[in-house]
Image (tube, rainbow, N blue to C red; front, side, top):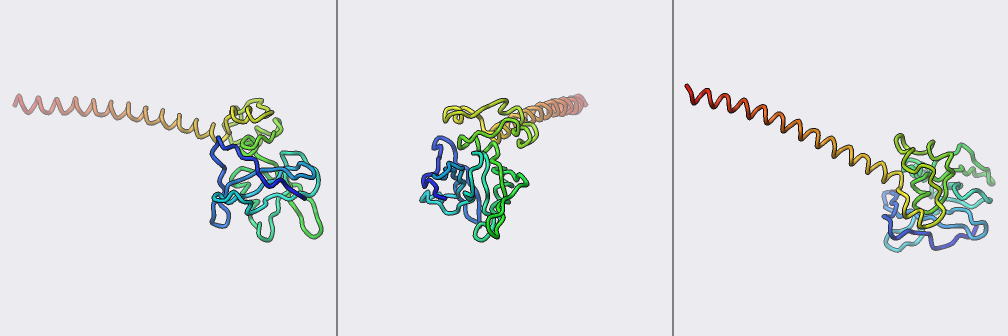
Length: 196
């Protein structure tokens, strides 16, 4: 159960922040040394030290899956990770002693940020509506691919911004037309008053 103590971080990208127990943490991903499983951790943003291990290393599983420790000091972390759309419940679990560990799959946002290949057949199921075309057929093979690939959330935010700008332009056009109509009515009233 040994893990690498230096989580991978892409310093070119904005870090993924997670609020846990009323504190902000940086999300980190590393690998367990003994079997290369994915290890998800929360880091102190000031020191970059591991403050909480989200995942546990029970046996070899695919890189896009993790077992989550959701008891004791970690109680509720699974809900935080799923509500932020970083992990997704698979509905499967493993019993280890008296404790059950849920199996979770890494969502595209987290996979792209840390270069973890998420199986393509699951991308459309896991993305929000309207995002299934954001990364069509994209396989993450290297750090360069990750840097070039848009994150699904960034694609959504960009599309929402474009839609908001277009809506604002449309509204401005309506307002200009209304002003033109009012201006014309004012001219008529003024001309009537002048002629009388």
